[in-house]
Image 1: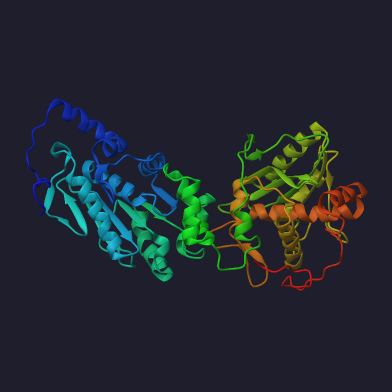
Image 2: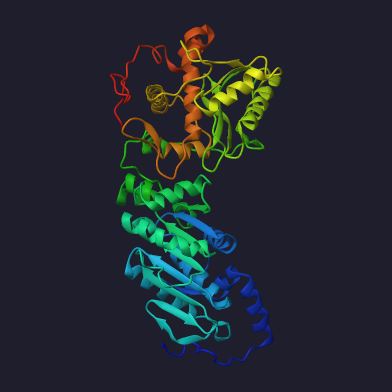
Length: 508
């Protein structure tokens, strides 16, 4: 066991009245415990008090209040030190709990325990739990309250033989893909019995388990509470630091390591460089699950695209609203709990809202599968919106739009052209997130594993409505000619079933 800075198990300590008051406060409040009593090793200044950044306090609050947390973090933010301080607090005040720390390297796992030990040694003696005879080594600390913190390199057997209260997976994205999967499969039974799990990492590729968990977490389709912290969350960093870092590591590395982009090795529909320039904005109003970024204007026209779903789990029904011809996103409805009838009521409510203002409205829906039920609701409603014009694809006997592979590819290419020429404006964070994970497959485009693309599907309906209305609506054609250029939708492209043809732009 270490020297005099380590309190032995069951060692008697004299408490003053003020110590008892502080002990009770520290037990209730981990942030007070850390900021008042924890010290850390600084590479330049040596041992200093741990003055938490605002984002570190937010992260600790998530650890405290949520069973599952996933933190997508820029490099060198201090997340590991923050987690070490939290687990020292947890192990000091709980009883008979075991925390497992797994990291991508054995050395990183050992360093985690070292940080806990440094913070422990500088605690006042009356605040320290006693250390058991075998509770002070490079890979674990154990206290006389029955709590242990154990560190191991991530492997399929990391959690084997342990009854775990919390698992902290540090830098999971940097563990080999097959080990990530094996570790997660082995861990699942432990979590199913009530254990908590915290995953924190910088991105490293976009197809591994961490990338899938992060996408699903950000989309709110798994149990993890999603947290994202970037380079500027460290107050000392400014634009000069950013420029210096880009010069040092390059723009692409900066996107991944400091802006936390999951850079794809696959061909994306929209390039990462274009998406990195898009800034989403907060919506000004939310009515149930319909977000509105701008008030409807009677002097403007709008296109509404609908992608129906089953309304179960990660299958979302989406309604997207774009101002036409500027192609600015103004509204978005997204729900994974509404059935077909409820989706129609949401659509009807949005259309009625626009009609009351006096807008010109074009709208449509996919008619495959579940979409047929929505069309039945529209046809059978005697009080359907009167002035909104329902658009059907040309030369089709069925209302709405049938989505074939060829039609989807063609709409995707038009959408990509609009992005590349700056002719479309995205305001929704969810829609932007989906574009960042929308990749080329062997025959089409779709979301990466763990992601969703329902918002994109609704936007593709908007694009197809746009192409239809300029064919017969002279005013719409004139508006598009003025906004996008006279040859933007001209020409007859031909595509095979893989979307290949003369008009296919080079994939980024």
